[in-house]
Every structure is written in structure tokens, then in C-alpha cells.
Image (cartoon, rainbow, N blue to C red; front, side):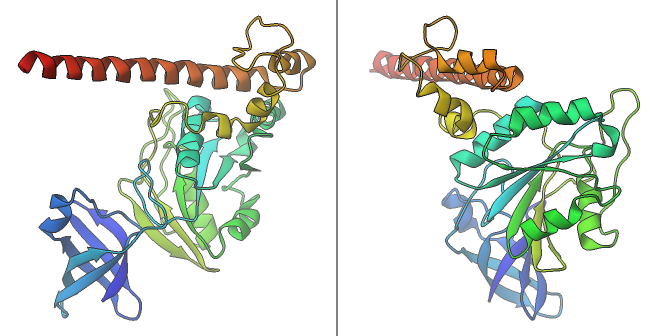
Length: 307
């Protein structure tokens, strides 16, 4: 039988087979030997071992159309990352890392800033200036008051979308609004640090009305740069395009003459905060490259010494 993994908990995988329901399955040892881990969203072949109890074994993972590391899901058409416009204050570095990781995997992204009812006009304008030219679809909504929910529903219709974001940003509230009923528990914001408590503790595929399929994931805390430089310029496409107009191809955008990026900053065409995010990620990626090179050299030296 062929089905799709809709949830994975503690080594058990719950596979939905159309017309038959959900089967609780264990993955065969062959996957561990192949170093392949089943992911929520995977299409799989299963063998039923107990029809009455709806239990089975996972026999094969079918070829994936996409595979993500963070969040660890498969076969998604797009990713929607949700941050609060305020309460808690959005971690833009984390947001950029998410966008870069999606760019690396060639998965289209949607940026959704929730809780606009709790943010000032200045805060909203600042976010629009930073991400208005990033290339991802940019949305400002209030899930609590269902403002902008219909637009999201249209963007998700007919697709499988992984939904990610830190705790406390209103992810569960949005899913409930899309479903038209309360299907997920929502958490409260801690007063002392304005951060949320995790209400999603595992990845789960949820089918909603209007042919909407989402994979909900636990709250993001940190994302590293997976591959040095790859994806940064694509994510900051507006800055990369300006950089092609600089006098020097290796321009660092600091004090070189005829720097198009610095000119855009001075003219107010480019957000200073967006540029600082871009520059800090490039600095980190170079440090990461140096650390990898050092580790590789040490490994080679140790092999030489053993000989």
C-alpha cells in the first residue's frame, strides 16, 4: 500500500492511506543502514501487519521532490515562515537564515508577519522597508482578528506548505483560523520576556478545507548557515543586483569609490538594517569557511602523522 507520512513520534510513523485511514508503522532497519531517515511528507510503501489495529511496517520511501533539513520535512511545494510584527519582537537574523536555507533547497518562501494589531505603524513600515525587495511574498496579517487570512488561504490552496516560526508568533492561531475551527492548542506569551511557550512539539501534516495541506513544525530557535555563501546573494537579491554596478567586482561596500550599494544607502533606496543583516551573514559565512578549512587541514595532518 502507498501512503504519506503525516506524523512521526518516538520512532513511530503515522501513514495516511487514502480510503483506508492512518496506519502506525515502524521503519525497517534497512533505512538506518542506508542512513536515510523517513520525514513527515514522505510518500512511502507500507506492509500491513495488523489490519484491525491499523499497524504496519514501512517498506520503501518513494523519490522526494524536495527535502528540507530545518524544518526536516519532504515533498513540500513552498514554505511559509511566520514571525510576530511585535510581542515578541521579530528576530530578523533568524528570519534571514530561514530564507537562505529555503533558497539553498530551491523552495519558494512566503514571509508572514502576524499580530499587526499589536505593532505600531513605524514598526510595520520598518519591516516593509527591510523585506519589500527580498523576492519572497510578504504578508502582514492579524490571525486573531482574521485579517489577511483569506489571502493566505488563496496562496496555500492546492499546495503542500511547511509552516515554521518561533514560539509565540501566533502560528497555531493562524492554523485554527485557516481551519475555521480550533484544531490546535494556542499558548500564552510570558510576561517577563514577551516570548511564547512551545505548543507544537513534533512535525505534523494537517489537511485543511479548500485543498490546503500544511506541515506544522515545532518553534524555531536557531538556524546555522548550511553552505558557505550559497543562497545569501539570492536571498538578498536587491543588494546583489546593486553590487553588480559597483566599480570593483570584489567590492566590500565599505570605502571603495563608486560603490553602488553605499550610494543606495545614502540615497535611502536601501534599508541600512537590511544591509547590516546582509553584511553580518557574509562575515559569518567567511568565518565558517575558515573553520572548515582549518578542520580539514587538521584532519589531513592527523592522517599524515598516523602514517
